[in-house]
Amino acid sequence: MTDCTVLVLAAGNGSRISNSLPKQYILLNGKAVLRRTIEIFLIHPAITAVQVVISKEHKKFYSKAIEGLDLPAPIYGGKTRQQSALKGLVHLQEKQPKYVLIHDAARPFVDHKLIDRVLNRLATGKAAIPGIRLTDTLKRVHSEHRSVVFTMDRKDCWCIQTPQGFHYQEILAAHADFVNEEVSDDAAIAERAGLEVAVVEGNEQNFKITTDNDLEHANKLLSNELSETRIGSGFDVHSFCEGDHLYLCGVKINHDRALKGHSDADVAIHALTDALLGGLGLGDIGMHFPSEEDQWKNANSKIFLEKTKHLLFERGAKVGNIDITIICETPKINPHRKRMTSSLAEILDIDTNRINIKATTTEKLGFLGRGEGIAAQASATIYLT
Image 1 (cartoon, rainbow, N blue to C red):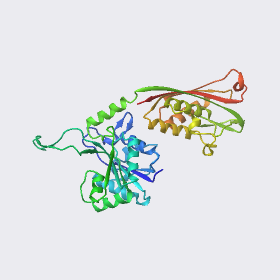
Image 2 (image 1 turned 60 degrees about the vertical axis):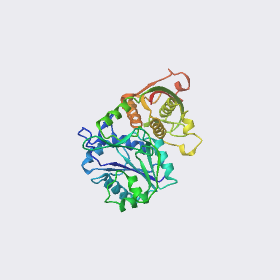
Image 3 (image 1 turned 45 degrees about the horizontal axis):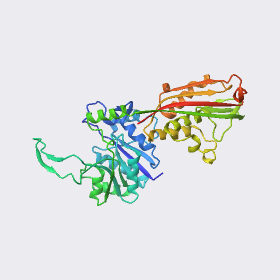
Image 4 (image 1 turned 180 degrees about the horizontal axis):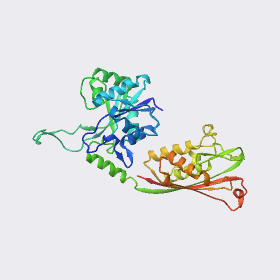
């Protein structure tokens, strides 16, 4: 990973939205705006850490929004965005990251390609920000009379977004030097400090939720995202070996034998991982986690499913439903079915009602019928944008 920390600024109140909650804690399709923003950075391979800056008055909202995420304690911000950014930067002095990305909490549709463009430009400069070239006519309007004062030249005008990227020491020093100046973003501070600020291509979907119309647009984006349905299938089998327990769906089950495999031989997770990868069109489990590689020796198969979840997220995919059939004479599956379902739901961050696990035998036929191993087959429905 690149030595890069993300500061997510979430200390504002969002007064232009008619909701009792601050805008960063409003739910979009069942998930808080802030959480959606944070999760995108948490799974980016170049990000070392994510640090959130919040209002002290929002502690309860924050705790509920990020429940289950592995994050450091939040920093309490100031009265202005600039003060909050400075407090966040000062807090990072102990870690001294090489780079820092400063991002608005209310931009939940930032994507990995945009983040990559900012980071790639930082490798050759001191500051990089995303932006979109202005295409509409630009006019200065009288604030009281709402009449046009004059038409402005839009030729070199860009609408600037976040995350804005900087070399950490440079932007910390700049913020400290211009602490009493009011500016609209961190790039303006960098400009005052004499840093050259490069602009990379932004993304129109990376808009900031500021008004009720923005919130409505965000909900429409999410409601329209399930545009393509795909179905993947997977099958796996492992033989028994000496041991006193085995794993199925991430659940440890005491048994008089174990399952033989390079990893922990969780046959159900392996079949499900193949099904999800198949739905994405990304090959199979052996391509992503080769048994020839020592790093996967005795590995917990939950890792395979977690990494596959990240691939789903990166491609804007959602899991519709999962159906798993475990084929064996022993152990009995029914006593463990509820724990298995909960285990998979937790790993994939989906509701348990989207997962069905069942078991069958081969009526004493074949190697499975002779009790020589366990097989599993899985199907998964996923939705792609």
